[in-house]
Length: 404
Ligand code: LMR
Image (cartoon, rainbow, N blue to C red):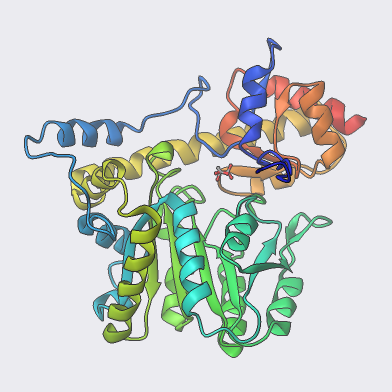
């Protein structure tokens, strides 16, 4: 029955921690998946999550009943405010549909599935995606019958944003095209548009009546500040760019395995929102019946309780600051100690969880096979995997590979 099934390739990101685990080398480093580690290299349960868990589990009224189809309302409304801001006009006008999803991947999936069925497509179902982008974006789109099309984003020569390339691709795209934008801390490059650049992007989006498909997986990780990292989304809303937002709490709350996220669709008015909600509800019911409760309950407590919310902000700062200090240390090691050939400013100028080292696929293979340093083939490293015990070793391996 299945003799014709071809062997699929392993996942470009999630295969790496498995290979890392199986590697018997004594000195090895896992810089593959974007998951925060503390300075001892261990997963970090945020102190605020520990506190919220205690509160949640000590509540005698806690049960394990189903959530509503579109999720826990205290969570989805708090999540919407967190990304759109308390003064969002769309929120005030009650025309945002927010549903709980299986983290950011689920939000991307449900958002794309909804668009594939109901968006006013102008031509074939295509979605424009930055080149490069998160390894899963294309698969998610293809899964729902949408063809991903690259737009230029990263200029390898200048190690920065190729704004002109991006703008001209957006200008050349048919009107009402759907454009996937990383809200902050672009994955994998760590290169974000500046505010004036976002303004230029918004200008073209409005001129061409394009639709913004925002993916926000790293709110808090770019600057250490939740509001600052929401600036692009909030700015686009103010400018009136039509959009949806995919939101994940995997990284900024360290709730990777709990699959807690949300999808927010900004509608033209309340009536449209009611209809959109009804269709999203049908999709959600058929796909997952109703979303998991645990992580959503935690996040609802954390966002809605002022003391927990301020503790969360501190925890986010702790993570963001440790990553920034690793960037500085790596830069100093490469430039001042090892005098590694090349320019390494991008290590400190890139933001968020990742650094796009500039290594090519052949160099990455050597990093893995000879150095036992696991990173994605596009040259991306998760800065959070570096710590005071392994950063010297990493810099030395990198130095050797660059020298060839
Ligand atoms: C990553 O990019 O490493 C993370 O978003 C984890 C994932 O699911 O790929």
